[in-house]
Length: 250
Image (cartoon, rainbow, N blue to C red; front, top):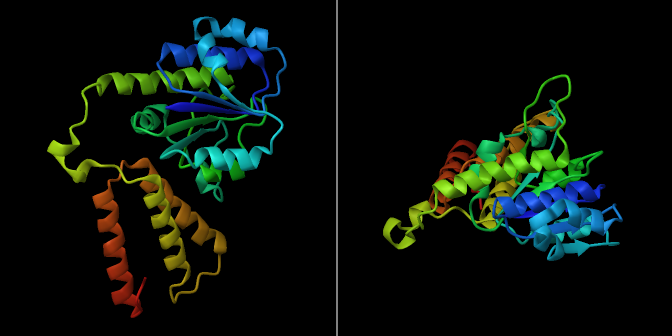
């Protein structure tokens, strides 16, 4: 699992996260348009994790959105963090717990995205990710410090990885256990969106359609859905739509 920090503001948080990544045997660190200037302070906080910080890939002075989109396209699963609760019309903000997120992040090609200390990730950035994680806390002050939140998620992921140290024998277990690739999952989401919007039904509230489509995406992304399961689900839905609407679905 790699870690992306979007426009981090304080050197202390960046250094502390590098140290945590060393503690919990995490992959590469990416810094997207960092807003701090004291590299020595960051290295001081990193302690024995300074090699993580020194090897970090820094994208500085580039459009945040374009680099963000380009970077996450290289991963099979992208998990974003947020401290803000979801609302009725923002189903994409419905979160999962760190423990559930960790069970997915232990796979290959995964990326954890942490937002700005002051404003977090934007709605558009969250929509580009596969799932959203939040850490429950007391009602009086529920927003955690960036590095503290990172530490909880990195620990949970390390714990899951430690439990699963035994290598997966795919030849013995067969393709049934191979998780569906991100491109395949996205094609399913695109197909489902297109199919639902082209049914011969009238729904006056567009936001209800959008919320339903997003809810289905949330369910698929939270489950460790395999290639076989994705094929079965899509095949059944295609048959169901064809028989109930009298039209062929491509």
